[in-house]
Length: 207
Image (cartoon, rainbow, N blue to C red; front, side):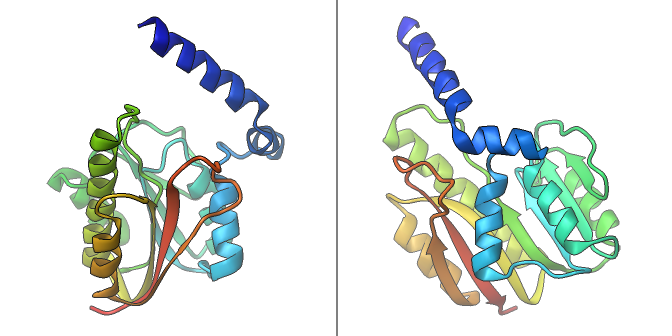
């Protein structure tokens, strides 16, 4: 227990010193993760005015904040998470597990029968520190996000998800390529160097 407490204190101290955290606070973003999405957008041109976007695992809402600014008033941004998210202007927020019918019904209602241009997922499991536990959990979340994208993207749509390199990663890349014309990975500067996280960007969905 004492070891966990020390690790927790170290994480908090490191988090508070993090220049990305400080920069996000000054700019009014809800988390440092916004700079990962911003870099992905700059390199991949993910957004356009009027697009329909869903953000899976959206809490605390920084990616939704960014997406709403990019798609404009004619666009639609829906954030889904099992955790509550404080309201955001121009964003529809749904709380619950997106694998459950009730949550999907709410999503379908918000979309009014239309398909999505872009599916985003920054989901990650609660980290235990044991790779044999954490890696399968992270790959499971990525697979859920991919299944969601296949069900809800329009032809030509784009899928972006966090993936952790390790067991199951190569198979996931291969699976993604079966549904998208172009699949690549990027590691934004705001991702911590020691983290095995990368972001898969899959373009031109083939229904």
